[in-house]
Length: 272
Length: 309
Image (cartoon, rainbow over all chains, first blue to last red; front, side, top):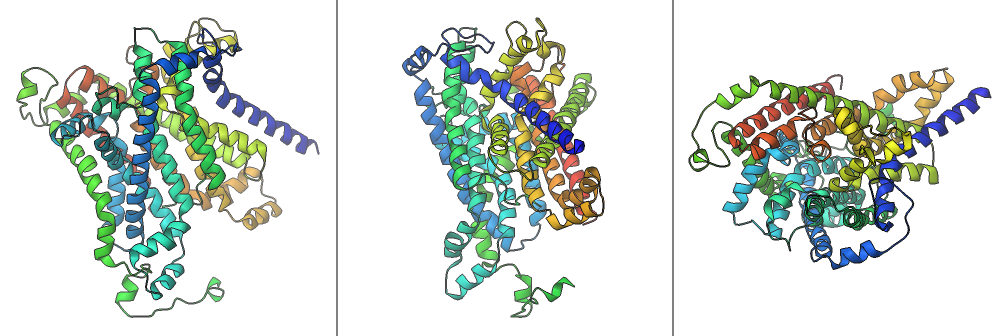
């Protein structure tokens, strides 16, 4: 009995510590936007909306959020469609050197999306006339995310039962129809996971848009945050925190929506 | 033994059917290739090609400005040799190893598994609250979370100092590596937590039950029942987050590699020499070395994954 009580106490202490560790850094983001003259310290807000008014008057702040939506939705859509098709093909048909190919691409993607490839990607974008083009940026971001997406997607595809596809084939469905009407509904949680993962990735990506979009009207929120940070040498805390909150809300909403609709978790995914 | 319950595999056609055993939709190699082609094309143009270009640039003295910018010369392995004889490169490598071991292997995997294990049999609001907060730290944009941590750890007005009543304590200056390790643990635990949550769901409850009946302690259940079941998940998870952490640039947003290079992990080091210093060729050579280290790490994990399988 004492053992049980001690266990309970230990459990709730651990949970309390965990909650504190994950909550405390976030507090500033929900208090500072509503404080008239915020400092670094978390303080009880006086619930002013002046900061939001200032952000609404900023010429590039709100449009940049829309640019972020365009970039992340475009990339996520492309990543999900292309990764699903490729992962299905790689899951069902044994192409020579398939696993080696997947692991090589995964390895490349983890390094090349970082700082290492900045120079070649910039030169490539100049050559292909993709500088200052949101479509070009979407293609580049998609290329970087695809290997990991295919890798994750393939696990979901491997786990689906093949008998449905066989029946569909018996009834004369073409492979594309089978993917569209049989496989996609089965792996929907996987598609949702990959889509959310892609959106979150692009939504937060600073380096690539900073490098490839010089037109301030096309820049996404990540780049605008950075300019708020450095403008005039001193960080403008009220603008920064307010914009940060606005910039964070869409991903939070997306997470809530997806977790309610599909259940945001790996359904035994990512095995091998 | 188990075969009795599952129907025997029906072999319909010879040869061909056995080769495309899993190809239930009748895709065939040609159409499979067509399905994969758009993805592979984008990957080839925007991933493989830049990677090869990095390898080539590493062999030149290409610079951002000056004569070498217009007409880069081929210098062979000079860049690689000067990189491996440069002590700052080695200190960056060592810091990166600390960063990966501390924040990915110990921090994210340890904490992620611990949370998944603690909450494994629970339902309801407490579980959703903990998971939601952990995932929140993961999905918020890095420009925002890094600034949140700057505000938290600030020396003069930071919330941490106010909470601990330790005025003038400056973690980012006095313990830069510890700061970015704790930050990255906070930032990335969600991925491991979700993966282990799913993996633990696959461990048959009956096995745990028999272990409990046989008198196994909590640790023994973990070691003898749970770990063997989720071994593949652990290794895949380690592989992915090690690579992600290895190439993570976010520490730059917290400490900018400082003070005095004390938190200059390799990704930051490349940025500093290539873009701030303008030595693109040398930076590309360091990137090549990073690629090789990643390859070694990946092969190591894949070996482990394949053994005893």
